[in-house]
Length: 70
Image 1 (cartoon, rainbow, N blue to C red):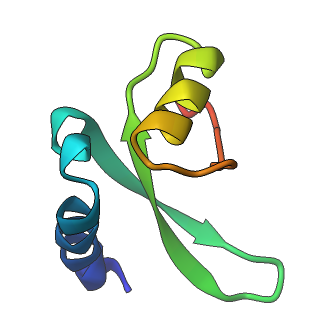
Image 2 (cartoon, helix red, strand yellow; image 1 turned 45 degrees about the horizontal axis):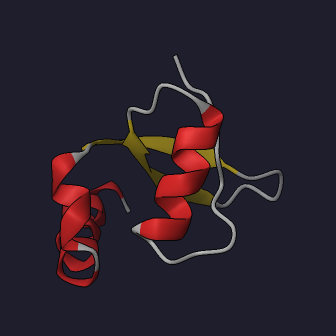
Image 3 (cartoon, one colour; image 1 turned 90 degrees about the vertical axis):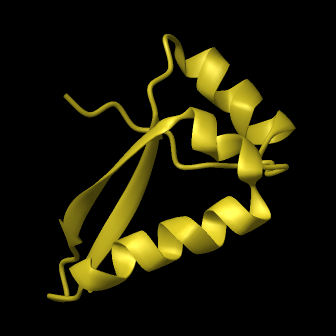
């Protein structure tokens, strides 16, 4: 739920303290089956390559969902 976004952000900060240097926002996502999720967006990055490198170095993930939102 939307109320849990800030709780999840704090949990992620405990795992990845480096993300505190980035701005975060969230976006409501509704799936085709009607389920609703709130996706935490981390940024801002100047290029897709920069975001991919951040994903590997800081988050230690091989794959992140990289989107452009205006």
